[in-house]
Length: 67
Image (tube, rainbow, N blue to C red; front, side, top):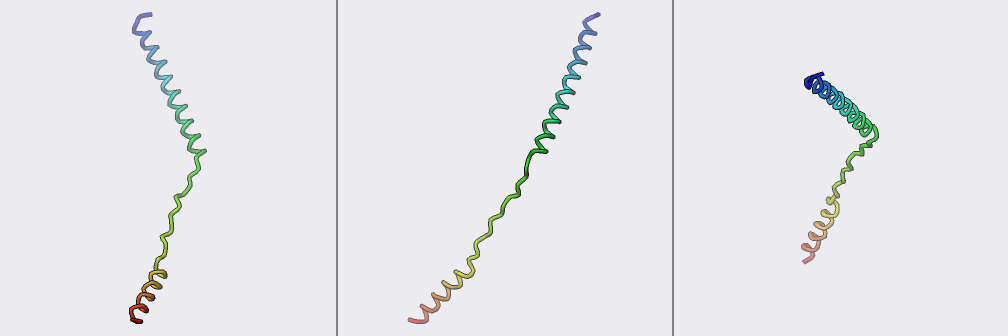
């Protein structure tokens, strides 16, 4: 058994190791994807300032007309 065949066996073992590592990483990612809960982002409602602004404008108009 020469050095070339020993290196070839080590290379084959390394490729098998990488394939197993990739398979395990895929399983871990799948388990995380299954366990995550996606919560939709809550959009804040903008405050409606139409009515208070209208009341202030009406009060300002009444005060201006009273003078």
